Every structure is written in structure tokens, then in C-alpha cells.
Image (tube, rainbow, N blue to C red; front, side, top):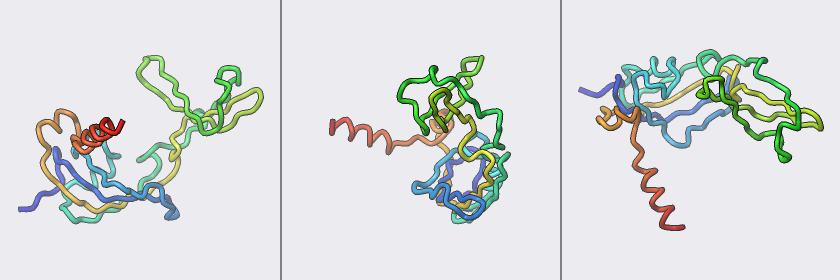
Length: 169
């Protein structure tokens, strides 16, 4: 019996994400490896569509903005006095704002700077954009107890790379 994607399985996907006119958003240069079963690693519409698929299966889904990074919210565009920012503030720089609870963080991208004001955008860069997620299921295996405890795959390769970097320093 072949393994299919189900809760508490580690799934490896070869994927790509394009925009509505086929423009490349994410070429998926590295496979996507995640713990399947509602752990928040993928948008729910993708995870639901992958449920029950076998190794080698192709899958494609068109995501509407509300199923991905949300609709563009004009209320997340703000202008703040230039004096509140460091001298080197420039478009492309990111700032974070913590919510009243101290936990929630909103990232703001500086989009414009003039002598008096800085314009910030708190929308995700892909907010309001429909996306197409395409993939092939490259591998499926049951998660280990450690992976279930951690909420996702353990990446031994990163630990090895860190050790190599320390040796070079």
C-alpha cells in the first residue's frame, strides 16, 4: 500500500508560485518540506487540496487574495513625521510595530521619504494578488515523534551547515 498525504506526515513538494498572468512569484528553487495536518505551514486551501494525494501526484490551485496574503488594506498605508525615523531611512527599509498586547507585530515597508514625511505600507507585498500554486508531491513519510513535538520537520542539514560555518570562521 502506498503512502498518501495525511495528518502527521512530512510532505516534500517541488513547487512554484505564479501570479495571475503567469509571472513568476516563487520559482521554488528548494523543495518545500512541511508537516501536514493543520499546523499552519501552508495556506489551508493548499493543504486541503493535497490531502490524500500520493507521491508523484501533480496539484495546482488558484488562490484568491483572501485565501493567501489577504486583500490589500488601504488603512495599512500611513504617513509619519520624518523626525520619528533614523537619518538613513530610505524606501525599501522595514520597520516593525508591536500591537497593544506586545505580541502581534506588523511589518511596515518604507515606500516613500520626503523632507517632512515617511510613507509606510503594512500590507504584505502579495496582498490583493491572486496566486497560482503548482506542485508535484516528491515525498511523503510519517513524522517522527520529535517532528510532531517541534511542529515540523527537523532540518539536520542546517545544523551541519552551521558547524561548517563555525569551522571556517
